Image (cartoon, rainbow, N blue to C red; front, top):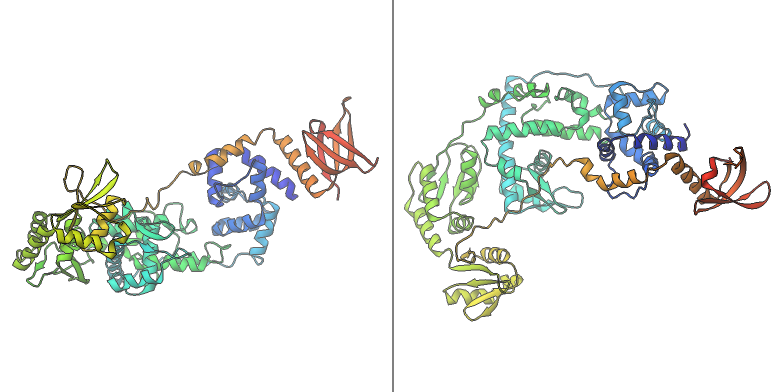
Length: 575
């Protein structure tokens, strides 16, 4: 099939597809929603462009790649493979590849498919299963630590989208991970399952991630295990919802040169999450998951260390958990104390700064006392009670409010010394505080002013117009990391433009061929329908197209001719 005929055949096929199928094709082929295509012929030409085809081949599964290579040799694709290849605009309706697709396939795999790896489904041994359960527990805690660190301050990303060196060090220094490589692996895992989302410069915790933090450890692990399976590349999945043996992953995408590297990454993720042992064998609780069913959490629960819901509060302002602290308690305790060590027995340290941060986040002296007394095996030590009372009394001496009338932020306090200190504090230059009588004002929003004062260690309290305290949420959350946006919605403007440009496909194709001939100053044979019903062929050097007419120089008569497009029945390029 000549390339121009292939473009026309694909354009006709695209016109017959429903909007949902077209949108999915564009998504699969990574078409930009802002594409300037005018009609289906533009779309067909772009989709059959060699570069576009080369980018589409790596996504094919092994079965689809085998069907495509067979079709290149003249055996039409059939069944589900034909449907998959046709849906990606790689084969025509007869199951044979378009010319540019055949050429790209031959170039990518000149020797055909390599032999597939011998699959194995050997389960882990009891010893390696125990190690896998430890990995599940440890890495669930590490991901939680990463999310908590990210809530405090977003994780910066470099141009490639990966973590910056500074952020890797921050996670290592905080104890969330042990190595920079582990930071990359677990941040990537969290992003794949939707716990983290990204903007152009940073990773942020998603709403799903924030909810996940308060789940019990086994529930955290369970949800993430299911999400990891859903996030696996299409080529690794089975039709029943499970996945093919991990031995086959490296060769699952034959056209993808990065396939083995991607397979290694995904294997490492599943090993980290305790679904595979260190040798890549299925952990007992992961066998049903790999077969398309749910996880056997009972098998894992027996191997996880039991969680505790009590701590020892000590006179030196520390708390010691005698085992893994229940996640919801750990999260709240860390909002009022700095964790000093992480192990099955973790330690936490209280200070005026950590108690002040908890009050800033919405705690009160009463809520702090109630929570700590409720989880303490040793009561509430006097030194800790004193820090809570003193910090609570100090907190709120500086009040920050927004004045609706003037659109200014007002900072007030009864302490003249504090007022003068804030007025001259160089660390507050960014909020430009100005003295007016017995208060400070700023054009900056109240929220920004409040956090600037808090960071500078002033006992600030945000209040509303009626003077009531209001709690501010500092952590910026990502949009849902895996929103599942309908492709039809994404490509709606492009689809509308393509449908509007459809019109008479034969006339549109004829005009397209003539336009290309004019651009190339090509010589073409133009078949014209005469008034008496007969047809005549003119050999012209195409020179112009516009106003519904083709202009060209007649090679035989050596004259300029102008032919109405409505009378042209066909055009053929003269080689």
